[in-house]
Image (cartoon, rainbow, N blue to C red):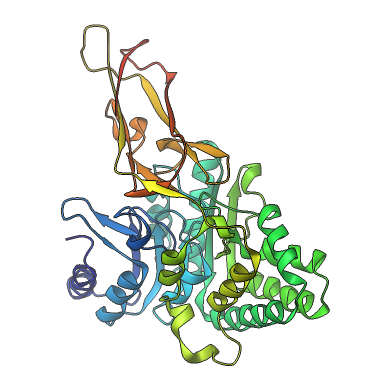
Length: 402
């Protein structure tokens, strides 16, 4: 069961025994959803899914699998969507020296392993920081020349996490004590870098907005300290696309009332960054969010049953295999009257579901979309676009199933 924390522990122990080394790195490669867990929606949440068993690993499960192995890692790399978050880093506190991950959903191809491992093979004595930066830089180079929309990738020095945590808790305390700050934070939610999950905001960009817009001096000072701490912790950060230009390498959970619900907040409270007693005096970021949401009003988003899917396949005019490149697009509502188009080539995780690999990567004349068990209510639109001819197909007969 590839979604079992015990299986992850066993794999790490096997790898160490079979291939003993002076340095260890771990790649976690699958669907990702940041810190979020199954209880809100479906098995497509959490960072690792096993479709055969129907199981998944939540963020705490992943950290437990690593912790129980007893192996300390030089680098942990998430080849999974939406994982570059303060909350994710904190869950792996003490387990690794560096982490590499995305703030935004990744394109279907994921990390380009050939150039990454080629660089490591050419320089096996590189430091952990060098390896983490190599992962980031090779990823960025690959997608600069293979345009798949806006991309992000960053590497962080985990030895700087404690300092960032202290500054973020100080910001939470300052925001709690400043009665006028709630309005500014709500404005920041509409004016700072967000991602496919709109409740994820770039932490540096959010703090920068507070520095320039907050009324209280204490909030401005605390926000400036968070900016400095993020800059110190993020050792490499690369972005592609103007829509990702304000990404600085680390996101934080900052939902509006319409972007969360009671179950999601209950799950959030279970994370290591919120349950530990280390912050008894200052509270946690989660406790600040409760204060913010309690006072902000605005209701909660409307959810509805999902459990549906769209499947597109195509053949030539004689119903034989066709190698033309077709793309399945799905429009998801955002719960606030708007929405956005998603597609496999843009990434395999979306707010209300997930996609198959892009057909140009899988080599199969098919693409599909599977909705979560619980989705944002609204209209879901879909279309199939003929992107390009194949070696044997200049036209295609497409079939769409619901």
